[in-house]
Amino acid sequence: MRILLFTGKGGVGKTTTAAATALRCADAGLRTIVLSTDPAHSLADAFDVELGPRPHQIAEGLWGQQLDAGERMEEAWGEIQHWLRDVFEWAGVEGIEAEELAVIPGLDEIFGLSDIKAYADSGEWDVVVVDCAPTAETIRLLSLPDVLSWYMDRIFPASRRMNRVVSPILARVTSLPVAGDEVFGSARRFYDRLDGVRELLTDPAITSVRLVVNPERMVIAEARRTYTYLSLFGYRVDAVVANRLLPDEVRDPWFDTWKALHAEHLASIEEGFAPLPVLRAQLAGDELVGIERLRAFGAALYGDLDAAGVLHEGEPMRVVRKPTGYELTIELPFADRDDLELGRRDDELLVRVGPYRRAVVLPDSLRRRTVSAATLRDGRLKVTFAADQHEERSTPKRKTARGR
Image (cartoon, rainbow, N blue to C red; front, side, top):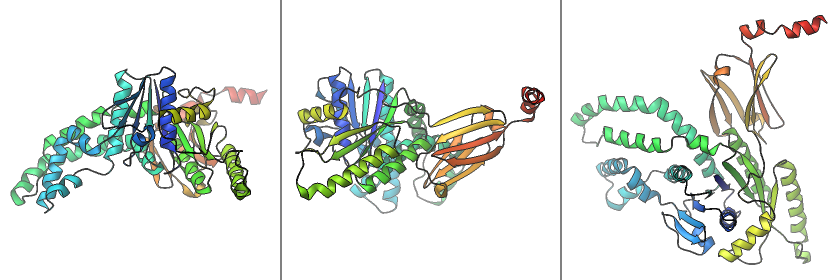
């Protein structure tokens, strides 16, 4: 079972790359489904077929789907949607406006996670290819398991208990529709469907993220930040796709400056993202639309590589025992010291990089230890946890070695 997530800045060609990869996997005999979590769907346009909110067969062994947040809201969160609609109508918003406002922003990401988990658990597919939204939305998608887990474990139970106490009082003093226990129950049941999704998406044998970039300075800069944020949340990037490179056949002098810039940016991509493999795709002479054009694009992109394989093995986070204690290493490529904040709260290590924060739940071996040092060097955050007194007393080997 493999899950491949494609993301990149809007307009870099991630939909084309995801579609071509899915088709190549299907041509290799793998049962493949490709789905789009981007609210501005273009997956159907890439294949030149009609796609809807349910899996639709595109080619032999290949199925496709585009999420519809409104329809999924009705199915999965019917009680919540009805309550929200009542709230908006109570506030004076009626008709279609209340219906539209009841679709909460960010639901595409939540339903996308739900579908990925369902397809992985079904046993019906060998490969799930995800055409993600542009990078900011993708980071939100992949940070949701952490955020939802934190909320459901800490805030949700207290909110539910508080609602049971306050609801009868509010019902006496106001006509505002109050969320009943069925609304909280609906949220709980839907969250349970996501149970284990983080473990699934951070399993390096199952899930890989592939970054699609163009040879442009701003695009590369955003891809570097995305790589950092993905590593922060424990997601494995196994390849970078350098798309729309000017081919050598273009010899018009007008393009000389562009070719020089592309060569410079490609060198920075290969150097900056090393040791990740960089897959190259030339700028096409026409639109990459339809199965045959996508099949040719996939063949040129992957060559002899297995499109569904793990193209690079890495380890975003690891714990190593040292003579003086334990060292926790988190890979944060391209992270800057000025953007990094580190804190500790009970059994969690709080790491903030730029606008994104992750609460790293520490393993049992580290929870009772204090942080003695932290350094960020060469894209690696190293946090040292001091040894406890028992360990210090039980390490006589070092003293014996000095005696010699």
